[in-house]
Length: 257
Image (tube, rainbow, N blue to C red; front, side):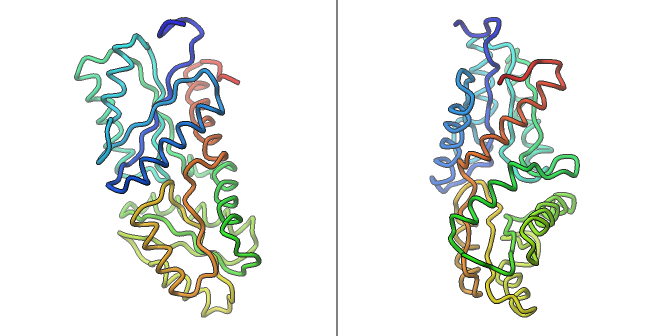
């Protein structure tokens, strides 16, 4: 079917933060493959805001040149902080400034939207926690990358509260940068309050230096397990498609099955 033909699915452009660590780009590509497999016939392309090529503006220009009239851009971010508010709109603007005549719908980030934590996100975090093999644990730390944006930190707190409600154990938040507490302090506080087996749920989309540091510090503080990043968990692919379908409904289009 030619590009932009009636009935053809709009391309989905995943936009990751980007990292010098090659494992991060590999995780984004794996997620793109998982999303594509979950929705056959939909073109799914990966892009990065920094460190890795191509950038989203380049991908959008290429899609426009290929004749696609529309695209959906999904920020692979867990909070709606600076990158979502500034970098993502700037990439769309750069594509348009370069002459790309393509209508772009930008979805919400993958973290809480409108104060609600998507069930697919929680299921993915629980999957990775189960894979970490902690057995029974009586305390949990949700370890995030960190941000100076208070509203974004509040959204991380919403995820921690939802995990606490579902798992029934005391839960704290920690950050790898930009804000306290660090993961070792959060693990230590739970242990000081009587939790004998503390697990750490990694609120990361991809592996990298931050996750490596969190895992080492958590184990050094006595955590019994640290989960892997979400990467290409099937629940994460489902969440991406939920975000795509949500903007389709807003635009008055029929989401693909």
